[in-house]
Amino acid sequence: MAQTMSTVPTMRIPKQPECNIGTSGHVDHGKTSLVASITGVWASAHSEELKRGITIKVGYADAAFYKCSHTPPPEAYSTSPTCPVCGQETQLLRTVSFVDAPGHESLMTNMLAGAALMDGAILVIAANEPVPMPQTREHMLALQMLGMKKMVIVQNKIDRVDSEGAKKNHDAIKSFLSSTIAADAPIIPISAQHGINIDALIEALEVYIPTPQRDPAATPQMLALRSFDVNKPGAEVPSLVGGVLGGSLVRGELSVGDEIEISPGLPDERGKYASLLTKIASLGTGAGMAEKVGPGGLISLGTYLDPALTKGDLMVGSLVGRPGTLPPPRTKLSVDLQLFDQAVGSVELLKVEKVRMGESLRLNIGTAATLGSVTSVRESVAELDIRKPVVAEPGARVAISRRIAERWRLIGSGLVK
Image (cartoon, rainbow, N blue to C red; front, side):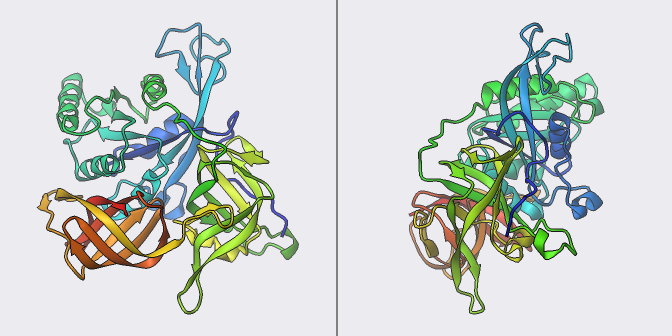
C-alpha cells in the first residue's frame, strides 16, 4: 500500500527534535497545561481524556527554543523566532519533544512507559496543595528508580496562592526533594495557565537538561509507545495507508525504504508471538516528513503493514530495528531485585514485603508492560515466567509493581540478568 502517513508529533518546528523531556507529577497539578503553555499544543487529545479532564494516554508535543542576544535572560528565552520583548530575530537553540505522562494512580503503567523515553524530566508540583501528594512521591521514586538525574522542578499554580503561601510550599518542596536525586534540581515558580515565568523555565531546561550524546552509527533501535490506524472510516481501498508506530529512536538512524523487524510482534490464534517484518514507508517528525531520522525526539514511522495490526496501540511495548539485530524475545526473566522500603502510590505508606514464590507481579521494561509469575526467589534474585514476551537486553531496568488493595503499587525495581 502507498503510504502518506499523518505524523504523530502535532506542532511544526524548524528541525527534528533532539531531546525528549517528560512531565510527571500528581494528577491535576498542571502537567498538560504546562506543555500547552510552552508548545501551544494540548497533549491530552484523546476523547476520554477531554471528557474526564485527565491524561490517560501518553501525550506528545514539540517545541523549538530560541534565545535573543539583545534581551537579558530570562526574558531572552522563548519559543518564537522573533523576540517577544524587543522584536529582534532570535537564535534557534534546539528543538525538543515533550512526553506528557499521566498522573492518576491507576495509570502508572502509562507513566512508566512514557518515562522510558525521557532524556530528562520536569516534576510538576502544585503550589496550592500539600507536599508531597501520593503521585508526586510515586513519580519521583519512579524517576529515581529509572536513573533520571536531569530534572527541573516546576512549582505550578503560583497564581492560586499569596507570597507567603508560595514560600511555605517552596520550603516543603525543598524538604521533600532533600533525600532524592533531585535535591539540587532548580525549582521554577510558574503559572502554566497564565504563561507566567515560562521564559525562566526554558532557560532552566537549557541548562539542566542538555541533549545527551548519541551514536547515529549504532545499530538502530526504536521504542514503540503508540501505534495507530490513521485511515478514516469508510476510506476507499486505493487511499488506504499502512499501520503507523509512534515512539523514539534511541540509537542509530532509520531511512524510508529500510527493512525493519517489530518484536515481539503479535500472538497467533494459539497465543504464540512472532515478530513482524516490513519496510518503512514514511517517517515523520515535528518538523515534517523526512527521508531519514536520527536518534532523539519523538517520531512516527509509517509501514506497509495491515493497519489492523497497529490500531488501538496494539504495538505498544515493541522494539523496532533492522531484521536479525534485536535481542530475542524473553518468556522467562531473571531479575536482580531492588525493593523499596515502602510501597508508593497511596496516602498511607505500606511496608514492602519480600517477593514470594508464586505471586504475580507487574513488570515495566522500556515501553512494555507485562505480568510475571515468580517461579523462584533466592537472596535478591527472582525468576519469573512472563505472560507476554518482552524484548530486553541484559542490564535493562525493570519497574516492579505488586497488587495491593486492588491497585498495582510500585514496590521497587530490578535489572535484567
